[in-house]
Image 1: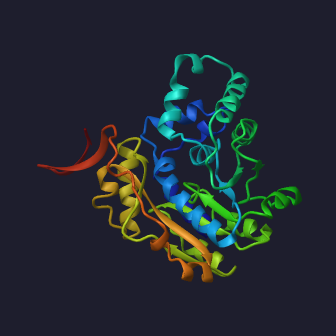
Image 2: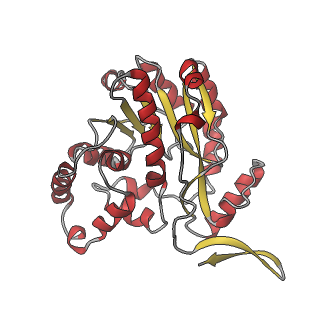
Image 3: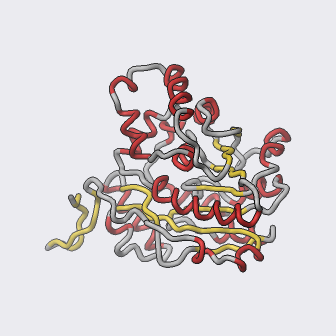
Length: 313
């Protein structure tokens, strides 16, 4: 089963469950920011290009369902002239650290309302974390939020109603924690054939999801020749375990994960007529994040005793 395989692969990764169950995103930005988390920022220009292409096909503002949305960060950086890095510095300020979650939610609602909204879509969020969904909806980042574990639960009638008008399903890191089970339930609730934008760490297989999408009339394309940096490895154990996992899957990590960074592929699934009219390579240009300045990261270096792990500045 794909879920079992994903569980095995996830054993190579650090666990950050605690940061997703807080009442606000301060821990999320602090812990992931310390690891140069950047997938939100490097994905945003690509998401914007794909949403623009989708809007030109449907002739309407798309409704996006962000799967694994956590605190609504994808919506924030898409809708407003903000970045993950900038938000991280905001939440690291001493006076922001000192206030209660309720005070922060009120402050953040006013903060986001003060920016011009230049988004190309409306956002709905899905996550297993009730506190994260509560925050994202209360501060106005999401029109609606769904709290559900669709790997193990059915989609409720009310949640299916919220999902029905979705035009685009987005994920920037949840593949590996959710499988074709979740996406199958979502696709069963939509009234249209949505476009599915997935940024997927290279260690996770996508075949079962692509098969599920094909059964619903969608074709799947992967953007060739480029990957997208997610973050640094947290420690030497995560670095070595991830390289071992990639090697077991016969995926060459040279120049990518071997340089101390998680890399993701961009995969787009959509109706065949849409893909034929505008291939993925024609609608997307990218900056992957590989040139960004980051903190020291774990790499292999040659020594008298063979390869060893070290921090490279």
